[in-house]
Image (cartoon, rainbow, N blue to C red; front, side):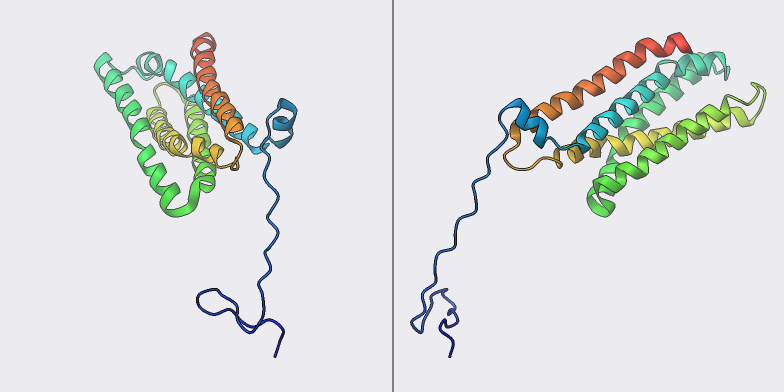
Length: 204
């Protein structure tokens, strides 16, 4: 018979053996100073913040001149331009429901962000390619509509995932760093939107 017997169902030892206490794990010390936070900062969050800045810059840059594009290039009427612009905006804010279902129910936040980012880029490529067509070409407005539709699904898929995915990069005890991250994250959103709104009309 071995020196230590098996424990019974109540977790108590028998047969003369005594369970020795296990050493406690070392206490986690959160980063408090700026050098400590910089050293412990998750490097992946820089990619997340940069991606969000570029996405917002792209979206608002395109949306700022979209009405002028519909009126002056595609020769839509005022009413048609208004309906199309508002329909596109509504679709951009409705598709996050699909993005959240895809992320939470099927493939996760990371794969969803990767997939819809590629989809977003494809929509921008289609939109840029449409500008190479002549104004009288029937392919021109069709490519524009297709590109904007793809962009709507792309930006909708990113919205519900990217902020939560950034928060997942931090561990327990890094609440202060998490607070700083979300400040930087929302600053990048507003900075990308503001800069794009001013710059895009100049280069249109």
